[in-house]
Length: 400
Image (tube, rainbow, N blue to C red; front, side, top):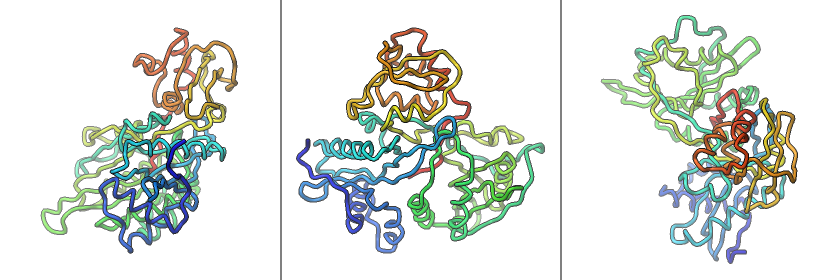
């Protein structure tokens, strides 16, 4: 037990929580005009405050669903805006807050908690593991062209921001999701609205209409001088497509925009196929590969039972979870499913490492070679590779 008071904040306290969080990341508080929009991405009942006796820490969350291998969508909570006042750090405030939050999630039947980490060394101690990665790449708009045989078909519609915020959520909801993708509740779209309105240049969206209706969209804005030499960069904010024709059609549109020199596409999946569509793949370059989502298996039995597995020999996995000890135990994982058992384990992992394995981003054998898990049966790592492997790179594409 801590000496801090930790409780859920009322709506009237959200602005104070926002100001505290922004102070911890060295940003000014929202002014009145911005708060009109910022207030809308606070889910009622989703913000914790730590008091001693004044507000010294906060964390915000919202309810959503996570798509897991096999296509099931399981309950998750997105965690964001986590901060502790600078004069109260390293005194147990963060640990008390994160522990209270996890216990609340577990009590509510949440299967996963999900966050984007400002620093990679913080959240592993609370059971969060790096579960998806993304890449940023840039294209020379003047010289990059799609191959003549790239998929085609459908119609494109250009929308301003107001119309995009009406149309894009429904298009997103109708798309098939790869492992790691999440639902986008209303509060998340309101966050994106505020961020896009904050841009110095107008945000636009282009929607692809296929035979069955809208099946993809891209959101972007273009930055650069309004005078010669007209050097401008298009920043791609979002791109989701439900078919090969939609994906190629959206890129054909972006590469055809006049008065754009460079396209920067951030937060794209590691297996994004743009390189394969280009007539000359050297007209694009990968700028960086980075962390995307860190997940925490709040309910290990439900998470393991909720996904499908590849073909391979069964493997016995012992999981340790000191913060939520009900998760600790040995699980028999096979292509037919998962069950708890008392049999000796072939692999021993902490819940943080299990999160890294869960969506298929990291191979158990690679983690074993790095000393991130304990091998008790020499055949177990290869068997776990086959069971936990996925055909598509796990990716979310949603930030918060």
